View (cartoon, rainbow, N blue to C red):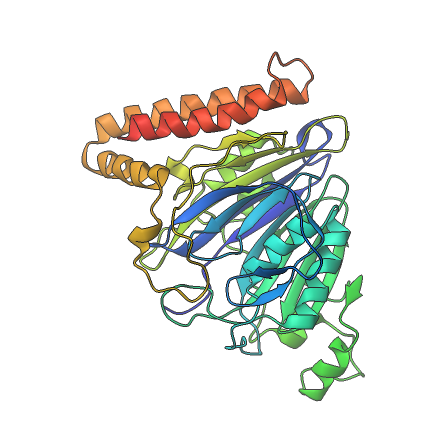
Length: 400
């Protein structure tokens, strides 16, 4: 297996996004036999000197960690994407660069996603945490459980008021602040001359490698990309043509060919959408599939409230350098979903009926979400959380 999986992640600001909300969306393309799970982690205080075991590396734990909802490969500690109780969302995509990724087992990009969410209370704070950990510990190790597949990484870090695009090559990094329009990232470095923050030795390092000379304007992607970087992410035409994005249109974009991956090697294993109202009196709402292929998955709404019950997750406690079969990680929702896919492929009439039932269930969640954002909902946020779990239970029931 060669090349980075073509993940896709974007943010849209008003007026491109409806209802004075910021919209964040991500498709997580991963090896097609991998299992991805949704994991809720409550806030927690930690004793001085505590450590946390990430996928490969143990590091110092923070005194206090936030409540987070994560969509993550079941075998690793880190996450492809997620959100926290403060309305911070982070997505990661692998990128190829001129410099080979480190083989040592350090922090994975997915570990940095989770650490940024657990420790940051806004997008800028999460950015600072990620680059500080990156500079201290470095990034490295295989991103896949099977084989040795290593990549550099890019992050989109979003809150209710702004976003930061962070691109990294080894311990070196650059970042741009985003406050308007629509911005997306895929598997290419995209930062150019507009850099708001950067590693203090970034330019000296590029110069020492012969990738940049001071007689030229510094262009990050030009210096660090392995080839002609270009400006285009596959499948983004529909995103660029949308005059006003809604939650429904964002979901449809994630379901589109070009954004939804289905190849011999890779599959979109999970998807998520977050709605971040700029009015802090309104709750942030996060929709996650927890299952492969968004064109045949249900986006289920989640809101952070007190006493969130545990999502039915993988029972294995193994993280890090484990070599179990993927069957060790197959949770009930994943297994039921795979049964449904078999039905959809072998009996199209019954499969279409099942798919329509699931889309009707998704519509109930979207309607409840719209009512809450418009302050006319009979549902309390806690009831929307219950709807998330009701969706899961109903999916399992119908799929089997």
